[in-house]
Length: 375
Image (cartoon, rainbow, N blue to C red; front, side, top):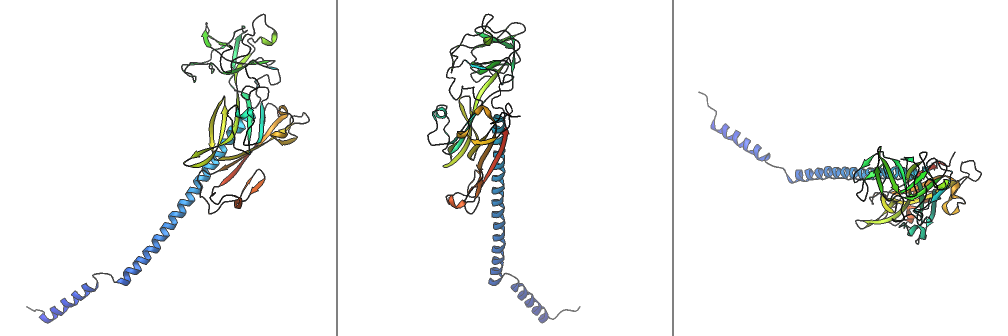
């Protein structure tokens, strides 16, 4: 049996040990190179992440801004388009039996009106209704009927009107009472027969008879209450009688204005909607609203000149409106420096803004025809 010399075995073992020793770790240079490569790669990853996050914030903010702009214009244009809508009696006389018929909320003689660049102290007509806009912005006021009329079924008495019962929702009104035919007690209503109209506040609602009729009273009590609480009946003059050729519909006053609120310590501009004596926040981020009104000066039912609210001669001749809204993103610090923007035909330089103002801004515009007046 052949056997390897002992000396050869020892040499081979020593060589293997030396090789294993050389491969047992990394040198300092190799570690430094590895760390440098790792830092470069990590820096690239961080930069990509930061860039992606910044792009996402910007795109998300712009998407929200676009959605807010469309939403605000949708509300505004719908109300302005319906301004002065009085059902089938757009051109007939309107008798207002309410108390305070000259107040902003209850003056239904003017379907559309506005206030231009309201100052720090708004007119009493606005402040009295709780409308206090930021200085320099416009206010638009719209008065119109709803589009859900209810048919009168027989001649009214001196104390109430009689209409069809279409639906009944138990507890459907804000005070917990039943909503009948879409109406509630205290609603401001208009009854019209396409020749004449009458505005009053509803009192009690009572369903009686077979088939059931809805009896609507119009008492002196209430807010604002009726200054004239007894009208109509078989022996009443024609202007007080409303029979089965008439209909009843809710009528309301709506106003749009901008105010400020504080969110997480920062001031946020908000577009508000005034509705029936209450103010509702509609859209955040609306910084300014400017509206010009198309006035028909020759009677052809088309706009001949667009004017600011304080330059309109006859509000009943306004047939359209141009709406300009300036919106900003809710998030700040979306740019490296204040940016220029264009609003209502003028460019605002970023250099004129505070250095901390890093918002993105966009203008939204719409021209709306007043359906009941325009050709």
